[in-house]
Image (cartoon, rainbow, N blue to C red; front, side, top):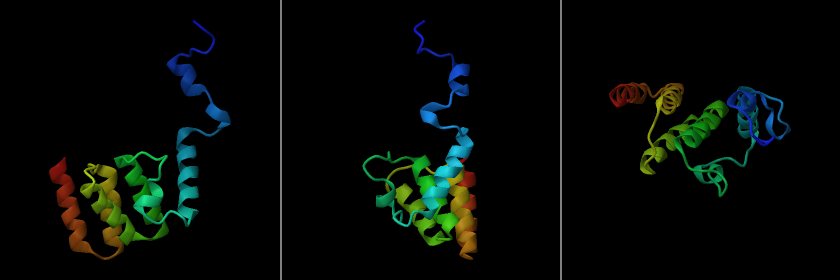
Length: 120
């Protein structure tokens, strides 16, 4: 094999692009940076030209708002996901439920919990 072909194990062990953090640490660092970035204030500023619109991306945006204490915005993203045809996953529901609870919207929390159970 050419020298640039790696096994799966070798790929897991590599530190790509000079990044010396494991994936979890990298994700936490990226999220911390996003939380402090005041320019991220809406769906449009998060999903700019380079970011693919996806459930995972929307979950990350919900998490940014939740970590900032902007729970209303997190719930708005949850609703926007549905409007744009993105499926909610367990992570989406958990953030939405936590946000509604922090806003003392207990009936919304219960509704989301039931909905999550029905979705499987």
